[in-house]
Length: 108
Image 1 (tube, rainbow, N blue to C red):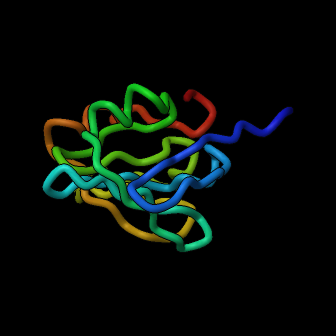
Image 2: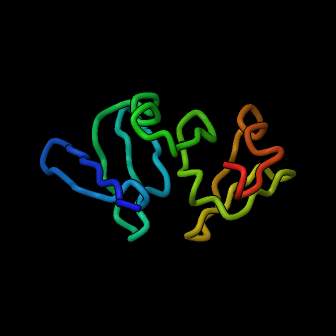
C-alpha cells in the first residue's frame, strides 16, 4: 500500500508528512494544531471543519478537537474517553460519543 503524504503550510514553513502520522487536530482561536506521532506539533490558521473535510480519517470528538480514527485503541464509553495509540486520553463530548457506541476496530 502506498503511503499518502500531505502538505501542511503555515506562515513560515511547508511540511510534508504522512497522513497516518496525524494523531489529533485541535483548534483555538482559528489556529489549528496538528499533533503528530513523533510528538511534533504543527500549527496553521484554518478551521477545524475545513481540516476534517480534507482528511476523512479524522473524527470530531468535541467542538475543538478531532482524532485520527485509525489511531483509537480504546473507547471508555461511561467516561466519554478515547485513548489513542500514544496512550493519550481525549475527552469525547456527549454529543459525539454516539459515534463510538458500537465501535470496534475492524468496523471502521
